[in-house]
Length: 417
Image (cartoon, rainbow, N blue to C red; front, side, top):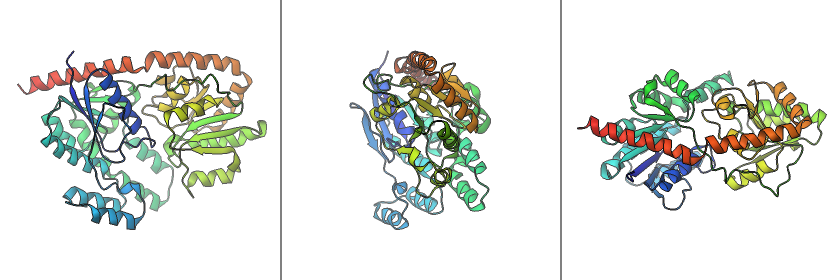
């Protein structure tokens, strides 16, 4: 099979914030291990890539590195040879927008006019106008993890305050662009059947253009540690605080109820708490300040250690396009409680205790049941790891990617004969 030159575009690739940086590192490494030459073309923050993968930096203004108005102005004026995209980026952020997908797309399209030595271009969910131009010149695949319209809807539903709703409208203004671009993309990969249905309904894409390929997991990195002792009353969850989509409120309310039965019970949250934000206020209101521990900017190895010391994992999300925390917990053999929504049942099958979303009572009862029957749920967790090894390994998933990649290249060449 022919070895390819592949460019992977990513408008931002934070190593620890969200799943984008994780996905970029994993997919680029998987394709490299198959013998392909891979360049990652990224805006800031930049990814931490494996050796042998070339990082090409497309610096924007990186205005979300700081929330200081003075620092943002300084960044803008220090930028040399400013183009119209830089002006758009600065003033959009000034008025509460998130312009990075749009401006990165323009920069990527210009860069690829100068360097066209690629057999295929993959874009990681920018869905920007620039992708339409790139698609005309290269075999092209768009990755859509899930429609961000879901994030927008859940955030609007979380508050009736006018000021908050206006701020959300401004932030998610890039969705107008994505809704225009998505139906014009010829080849889309998404990680779950649930996400495919969402893309069709939210973005009006042709279902025939969308291929479902699960994300993969390195089960050697995410595995139970033999020398780690699980703490009997330690719960663990992964959630960005103050992001309604993750449903952290309901885990916290369940923890409050569990304290009456298990005084030593506590919750580790892999995520960052916003000072003075909704989550911090809720924790104080519930009186569980000393029972919730936030851990952020963790490496994969550190996340594995956290799972290995925990007795029960909770995923209380209201929506997941593809729930990395679900398969990470399963791969580490942690008994899992997860909401029965979107992609989660696809991932867990029978190897998790599924509950209704927004239901702290079900979380409370599920934790009590697992603690009372721990040997039973340990066996289920062991079977869950075997399921992850069989279904989400990168060898299987990379082969599925290669099949679509070569099909995309063939269709592009035939269309341009």
